[in-house]
Image (tube, rainbow, N blue to C red; front, top):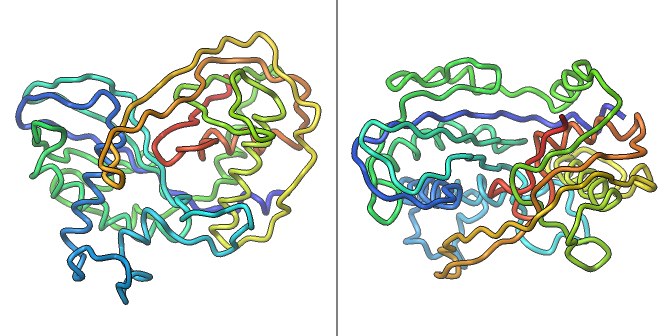
Length: 304
């Protein structure tokens, strides 16, 4: 079973300092993602951003980071994959002053990890241009990896600290720290999930377990690891003591050139009837997120 968690990951924790005040979007992941993508295009694109028919598209750094192809493509994957990364940001301020600090994280998986230095350079350039409608400028003060090692101190970068770990190591650590058989799952960001053809309106044990298993499966597809697409380990799981509400987040899509409303469930529940076989998947989901829009930070939960 542990071979299902031989997935490389690198988590970068960014600390940026604003050099001026201004307004910011409440949900910043979309702006950060878009800003880094824009800087990557400015620094690397040689085709005047005409992607269709570009002979270099397969080697485009933006495609490689944001739409890295799966090495194994399941039949249910119709669109481009965005399995290689996800953002996290829990700061919901809508304005900042000069000197204020903002923290956010980026998780990189598989071959996308090799592009970490380019992402850092793009973020530094992004700070010179600014974020939000007021183009609020910032400097990158510090970047640490998930091991707590300083990768960038504001001046110097230690590339060897971009080295990854395996999801199996994270899972083992979480299982070793488990002190109770009671499993309470708390969603900090919206979980958007379609199960049996319908978007769920309340927490459901089988839908949750299916979502967790599928996320691990897709991460293995990206790495090129063979794994069973279906597994019955989630059958019979149920939830109790659930506290749930719907959360809507608006983001601006440069692709569609308009605002898009994204919905999902937040809250907590107790997971019943979880087997020991399912636990590694449960803890892996903490790291990888679950459901739709995970790359935008959706589907983040913690087992408490």
